[in-house]
Amino acid sequence: MDHFLYRNGALYAEDVAIADIAAAVGTPFYVYSTATLTRHFQLFDEALGFADHLVCFAMKSLSNIAVLRVLAQAGAGMDVVSGGEYLRAKAAGVPGDRIVFSGVGKTADEMRMALQGGIRQFNVESEPEMVALDAVARSLGKIAPITLRINPDVDAKTHAKIATGKSENKFGIPISRAREVYALAATLKGLKVVGIDVHIGSQLTELAPFEAAYAKVAELTEVLRADGHQITRLDLGGGLGIPYERSNAAPPLPSDYGAMIERTLGHLGCEIEIEPGRLISGNAGLMVSQVIYVKSGEDRDFLILDGAMNDLIRPAMYDAWHDIIPVVEPAPGTEPARYDIVGPVCESGDTFAKAREVAPMQPGDLVAFRSAGAYGAVMASEYNSRPLIPEVLVHGDQFAVIRKRPSYEEMIARDSLPEWLD
Ligand code: LLP
Image 1 (cartoon, rainbow, N blue to C red):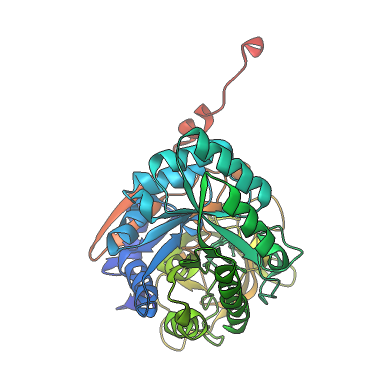
Image 2 (spheres, helix red, strand yellow; image 1 turned 180 degrees about the vertical axis):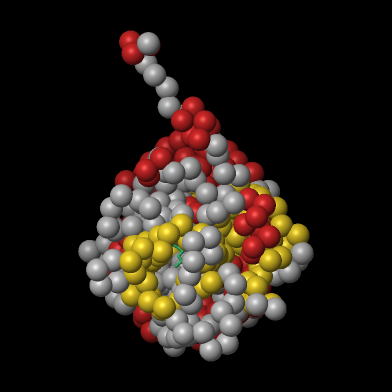
């Protein structure tokens, strides 16, 4: 469920008309709903009510500090994957003991930053990383709390570019080697083992792959405890998918997911962490764009928008589907038209949708890309020297720009000329 609905023929974000935001900030832009963000967080929080738990928002999906503040105020922790994300979480007011640090390539500087600023745990992905973290922690006179990310070798049944839990992926420690690596961890004085971490992929639309992975985690917990390790915390990763295409069957709900976690792992008495990104932020955001031209090709019509692949890369990168809807609701009975919906960037990959049926459009009309809150703004670039588009947060009948559109001058001023070119 989200808070982007038509009212009297106009698309609203909560109690704000999208057209009013467009008039104020120009197009294209991202807009997020506070109510949707909070509701999605709460669904996960309630689903884990059976155990001590922390829902750590995977902020790689949407990292504007205003969004992080909304979620932190609702009680969320953060899953960070870089020094930049760590500092953004801090800037949003998230306490260190609610931040977990994931990622295969943490640098010594990033480890130092997190140890000094406060961290709940590092999710360590390899032996070299473990040894490096031990050295950094000891040099600071600190002890780093860690889980080891286990690669359970299960097929997440999702797009190959976002599957992470098979043995051929770069992530985690093969489950077959877990005992050996935990034994090494126990010898390192700068580390304290607190649990196990697993994350098998993103946009999973079935529970079975999660359940297969979590069953392996349950078994491993018993084995490691028998080996003498204190396993008190299980970080189960993120990955629950969202319905991008409203016509498709809906993926499982957070409540189904929570019930499965309780069934598979509840008996172990561990604290549970999860790291959902997309399910919290995806349907909490739209990208709004304007039609520049309607162009007739030989065998098709093109809708040329002012938004492009640099603003929302998911269709070009993963062949992802986003529902594209008009901001003015079509009158009942309007016959749809069929367009290839494209941006102005100079490559054919800049295509959002092919042969898509939408209401007939004119230049100047606004369209909204649904489910664009996750992996939208965060993956944007300035390709073709198109400034990053603004982000807007709606709360009831209020809206605020939470990242402004840079001017062309600001964008160009980031470059500099070396003195020999003066
Ligand atoms: N935890 C870890 C360790 C992750 O690597 C990820 C996502 C998550 C949590 C959050 O997963 P989520 O709940 O959002 O599915 N750019 C791609 C998605 C990349 C996901 C990377 N890792 C896309 O646009 O589909």
